[in-house]
Length: 571
Image (tube, rainbow, N blue to C red):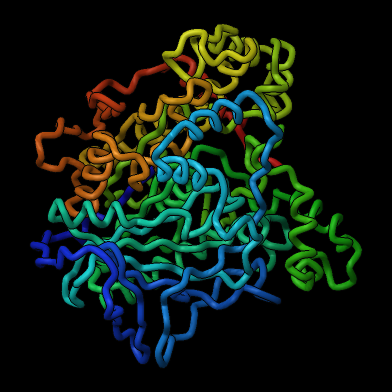
């Protein structure tokens, strides 16, 4: 998870206006004037919501695979009460019944708290009933505390969903709990969530895409949405100079890429766990799509042929690509790329050279067991011995690794389940001798080691306003531990615990003041600094610890990454 905000634009933290504390449905729907339009929203549970606000024209026809085009200004009366469709996307591959799904289902079936189970379900698939969505999807939602005045100048939290650049939707999570807590701790805020294009629609690469002046369409969607917020959020009572960019998983990667991209906006991000290939070098995706769609020999060229397909036909071709949940899908099918324009070089190179927006405050962190749920079950159930582990490393994770490097990797991540992830569980969760080993190396290679590497580089240029955390909540299912995205159960209030209150209050404080220390007796969260201090949060306690877990093996993973050896996006 990643939160970032510009420092230079926050000159004064204004006192927040008094807001209505009423809870429940408001019989008079809220409305705002937006240029020549009147936008009518809805109100419930102390929150006013304005949904399906268009920021980009429909990217269809010749605009498919192209940079987004700014939407025309609305006119008349706009009924903004229903969520927009999600963007077209690839579904998450749902595995057959196995020990992982059995353990997870058993736990949630035992819960009386339906919100808890609902929250977990939302982590695993986009909404819209599993439908593929619509190409006409460039919309955003704005939520604010009830009674917010136009001149309130509230800080803004700008949310970008995860989903491996393969799926996701702006309505996956509702911010009701977050906004209510922001009001109760007298730091009210506005929450914006956006749709952006995913899968081939948002991240198709190849020489044709490069020649057409495109690439990274989903990232460009996000940038256009940021520009919309800058231009329009004041009409909703927000302050365009106090926008915090927040993302999880692919959303956090996106935030990081905006930090190093050209044409940077006032609020940026940091952190990409993968190396990026050049747009023109990513030739296999467009070849797979074109072959499946019958476009390889199209007279007008492959790109024009793909643009002319129906969305259903393109989806059918796109689904020939291994996605998340498959053996090779632990690495991404539809990654961002170095296009030489929006992203001029790899994030590692740019950050190491100081070529990023240094004028930001940063909160980033990982969950302790990031690798568990991402490597199950397609990988771990088929990786049961040392030979299987070696096959997985060579075929999926590090396709160009030498024998000497493989032997060192195997030594640093030994065949000892007690050392694996979920950490601190001994032999529990060891379905074979390899599943905890696989989860450990994948979590370190794609999350923990890159986080440390990037924080180390940032300290050279911006040492005063960077915070990091280690999340150890949700240890209820021993097979998965503090799994990837499990912190969202707490962030969005699906879980009503001490940890939920602390997690929410700290992030709200950061949005309001650029400091995640809310003055209510909580342990002080220090800046990351040269001594590498992180806030460690579990269900019962919060502590400050050095960020030195598994430093030696992670340093080796860094050496592989800096030599250009994966983990790589692949297709």
